[in-house]
Image (cartoon, rainbow, N blue to C red; front, side, top):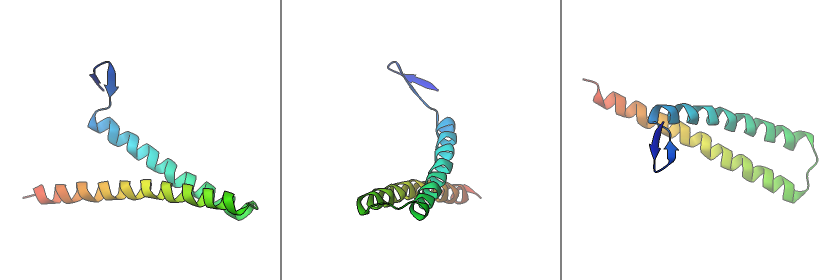
Length: 80
């Protein structure tokens, strides 16, 4: 961790590990919300809120995948 003006900023390695941790939580949250939709009767407004949450969580998951692909591409381009 590095300190900037009294605030602590994670290093790239620790940030990467934290991102990995949160992505797993995104997928788990998506699964739980899908089960909620299947098991419990929700009014239309509640269904819309759950679907919006699933969409937002999915974007987080997609971001991880994109970052992973960019890193792989970068590593491949630096190989001799």
